[in-house]
Length: 49
Image (cartoon, rainbow, N blue to C red; front, side, top):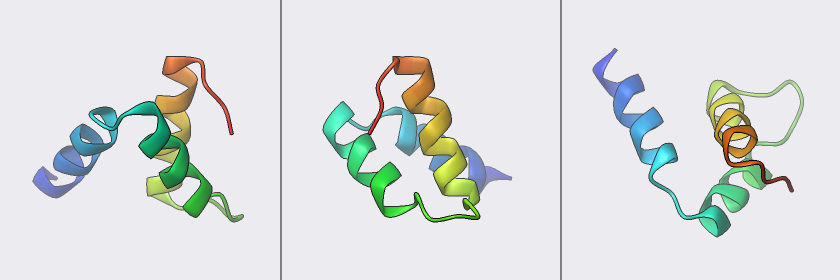
């Protein structure tokens, strides 16, 4: 669980451009957990690809 929390924190701390890059890398379907985390953070910030 600690690793998941650390990944979530790292995603939350990304600058918008880096977050968009991450989401672009993990946009394939079916989405991965990292892709889901990136999309959730993008939604929270009201940004999109």
